[in-house]
Length: 170
Image (cartoon, rainbow, N blue to C red; front, top):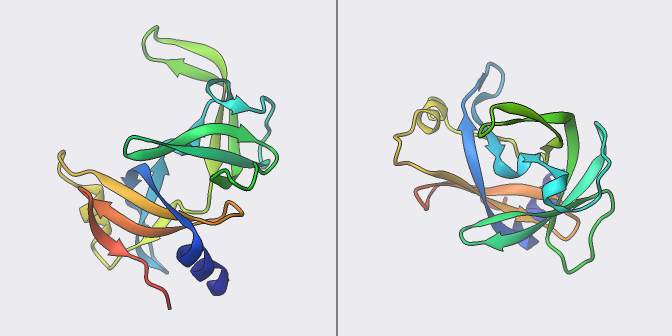
C-alpha cells in the first residue's frame, strides 16, 4: 500500500481541487481535516457520459482544467481513454431530487455523492481546528496527484496558495 501511494505521488499528474474543510477528531489517530470537494457531488445531467447510477458503483470522473481548478467533464462506468485525466471513485449515495435555491422547490434530478479516497488528511495535533476555523479571507485548496489508473493521493494542503502541509516521499 505504501509503495502504491508513493508511486502515485511521484508519477501522478498534480491537480488543484476546490475544497470545504470540516474538522473532526479521531481518538485513535489524532486531528484530521475531512475534505468536501466540489467534485464529490455531481449531477450527471450537467456532464457528458452515462446516465444510470446506483450506490456502490465504481465510476470514473474525467477532469479538465478550468482557470485555477480542475473540474468534472464526464462521469462514466468505464475508464476513459489513456490520454484523459480522470479520478476513480465509488458512489456513496444517489438522490433523485435536488433543492433549487432560486425557485425554492425540489427538482427531480439525479445527484451523486462520490468518494475518491482523498477525503481525510491528518494534521499535527490541534491544527485541524485552525483549518476549520479559518478567517473568511483564507482559501484552503488541495493539490492531488492522479496516476494513469485514476488513483489519487493528497500531495499538499494550500492556504491562500501557500503550501501549509506537504506529503514527502519516504
